[in-house]
Length: 111
Length: 115
Image 1 (cartoon, rainbow over the protein chains, first blue to last red):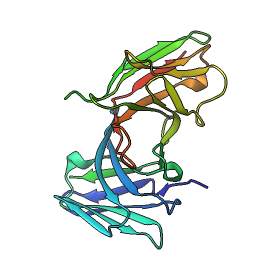
Image 2 (cartoon, chains in turn blue, red):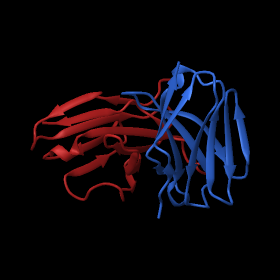
Image 3 (spheres, one colour):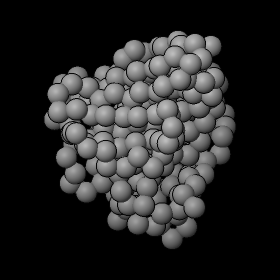
């Protein structure tokens, strides 16, 4: 199958770290993506990781990739109320470009 | 460099009418993708187009739905004889000519409501 799985909800306190997890299915994926969707808005590309990397850091964001377990995570350090959104993990379909998305993790940040 | 443009942002149709959704890709991008998002769901791929070509339409319903990306002008997703189940957000994404697996940039979406 081509399911990308994510937990649906995550709640954290402002200033804490958030970790959003994702499992994917296609081991041939060359890139894996994280997108952010705020209410009523489109998808904003947050970051991506190339499959030959284990980790990528970009300011407050850290992406970890475990290819053996097909597990991807997104860590947001010092989470702010503006980080409240739905976060989608995505992988290309069978190595091609149409993306397969998870259902999204709704992150709620409590002040 | 303007991002991916979609219009209209909101569209209301009665059952049986036609809906036309437009997408202008980012400058320099020749690949367009359409996705549908049902409430509380992730995005589902519908169709992938290049200029004047449909590359992959495996996610698009066989009836009532069609898509085009003409040589000039925006890409159009057309839904004929809309039904309530077509109510969703429709997102367009674009990417530059392929150099491997290229990143897709999304537009703000068109929210279709069928009454």
